[in-house]
Image (cartoon, rainbow, N blue to C red; front, side, top):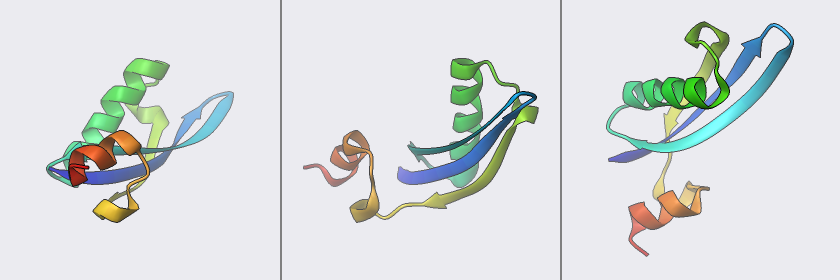
Length: 75
């Protein structure tokens, strides 16, 4: 499993919010799909209102989430 950082924007009619998520996935496509599912369920946003800007793999030393960092590095 690799760590991916997915950044994007939620565009609702009266709201525009940027977001950034780090998560574990096998491929970047899986990471994007997981972000759609999580943001859609937590914020009640349809997929058409979520705009993904980038999905890139993050090196182990650049992981910001302390839980993911501990899982990946084993410290």
